[in-house]
Image: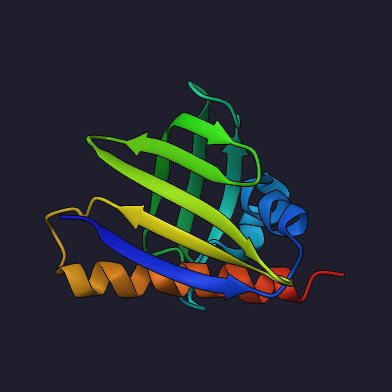
Length: 135
């Protein structure tokens, strides 16, 4: 079973791609709710390259690292990565003056599928808002 979420970002493809793959941008949008934030991010955007994001509750009560290895990169089109024994595919599809970003991932077993879908969609929604407000 896979979970898929997507969002339409009203911005040029190059801008969407850069914001999704640049650590300085990732720390601004990578959170599922206002009480969480990403304190640091690293990206080595190539097949075999590693990435990581440190996500923490703003009150300091909890935090975790989300990390993995890129398995396939097609610039401005596709990112595939593995994290633990799970995989994720991120597709960037340009249509008119917008980009549909579709994320398809293997769910984990600790939380209900719907909760996982909601969390990943919230992050993707934050991403779209962030990019659309970039100058």
